[in-house]
Structure formats: C-alpha cells, structure tokens
Image (cartoon, rainbow, N blue to C red; front, side, top):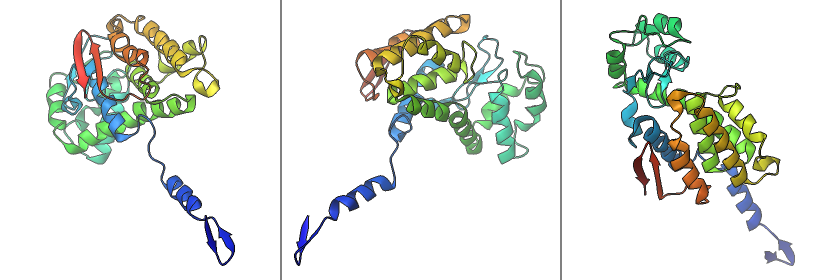
Length: 261
C-alpha cells in the first residue's frame, strides 16, 4: 500500500494476481515431469522397461486376441488405434514404408488376423520407428486417444496426479469405451461404491473404489488377469498417500522391481 500526496493506492497485489493468472501451468499429469513419470510407469508394465522411447520399434502378437501390439502405448491391429496411427503417418509422410499396409489394417480391424500383414509388417514397423515423423505420430496419437482424455476426466473428477495416472493406465489397457470392461464401465462401477472429489467424495476412497473396479475388469480377461500393475504399483502409491505421484517411487510389476529417484 502506497500513500502519494494524501491518496492511498493499492497496486502491487493486483499486478501479482494478473501475472499469476496470465499463463496457468500444468497442474497434474500433464506437467512435463509428471508426464515423463507416467510414460515410464506404463512402459514398466507394457514393456518391462523404463526406457519408453526405446519402444517405438516394439511389435509382437501377445495372444490377447487383438492382433499385433506395437509402439509406445501398445497400438493394436485389431482395435483400430494402429490403423489410425498409420493413417496419420501416411497423411504426414505419403509413401512411407507402412502406407502399403493400410488396406490390410482396415481389413483386420476388429480381429486378431494377420492377413495382408505377414511376413514383413514387423520388419517394416521397426524400420518406420527410426523415422522421427513416425515417432511423433505415435506421441500425438497416444496423447489424443489415451493421455489427454484421461487427464481431462481426472481433472473433471477432482483427482490429482496419481488419480489421473490411474485413469490413463486404465484407458491404455481397456480403451475409452463405455462397456463394462472399458474405462467408462470401470468408472461407472466405481461410482456405485464411492464418489469422486468433484462430487463431494474423499479422493483416497474414490481411487480405491476405482482401482477395485479396474482389478475386476482385468480379471474378466485371461491376458490381463495379472493385476500387479495395480496391486504392487498404483495401490502402493495410494497407500502411501502419494496423491501427487512425487518421486522417489518404488514399485513392482510382474514381480520385477522399478525405481524412479
């Protein structure tokens, strides 16, 4: 508060408020440091490695009925997200090494078939993964289909960084649909047991209910019946009260131990 020629002027706090509100920073899993942690956590479960950037070239059929699973987030030839990715890559770089597989990817969508993909699709995928344009396409599709929807719903539900990650990991594995074993169904099942903070509920209680529903969904499918990515990872962080997903982090997936300092 300043007094100038008998007049009282209040200026500095207003200026501070305006500056603080000018460019709000990311306040959850979309904070760059937290997003990097999220990528490592998912990679530990999907690829048994914290080096998520090494997974652009990853591709195999894991026998879960979804055909080929590949890339940094497990894009699948049988679920449409791999098709969307290769279409985006073709738009950005016409005539790329994967573009010739687009008809086959459209035909196998919804099945576990490799028709039109074998024998060279895995080799060509690995070749494409050396292209920064394909790496960026993987990043962008990951964010559009999985990461951004998870963060948006998490913030709408009033959950912090850990909760947003729990949503993200669930969408990665189960998809963002509304059937009982997709993200929407998992969230609906949790709503039958608890309320999220945005509806007046306790955050820890809500996240426990969500993780319970997630475990139920995982156990409906043999390929996902190992629930350690919840039990010995996300649940551990929750039990420690680490709702902001702050390092150091120690967890296990499929019996393997991981650490982020």
